[in-house]
Image (cartoon, rainbow, N blue to C red; front, side, top):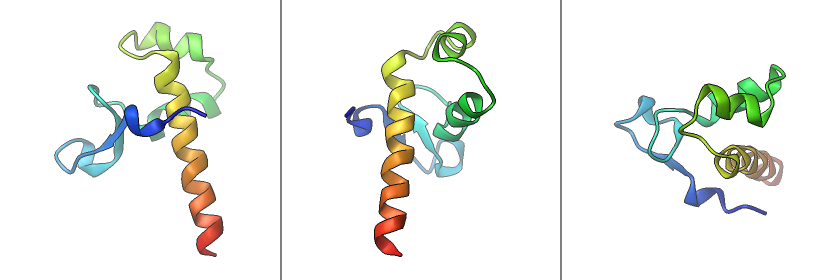
Length: 74
C-alpha cells in the first residue's frame, strides 16, 4: 500500500486546512470527486499535469485510512 503521508499534507494556510497534495492546491476531496464522477487517472493527469498516478493513489489510500479509523472509533 502506498504511504499517503509522502504525498498528502494538511496546512491551515492552504485551502482552509483541507488535506492537499503536497506542492499543489489540489485537495484529496477534489481528486476523489473527479474519480467518483467517472474520470480516469489518465484523464485527471491530462487535465492536471502537475499530478501523477502515485499522488492519485495516495488520495485513495488517505480516504481508506480515514474510513478505517472511523470504523475503529465506532
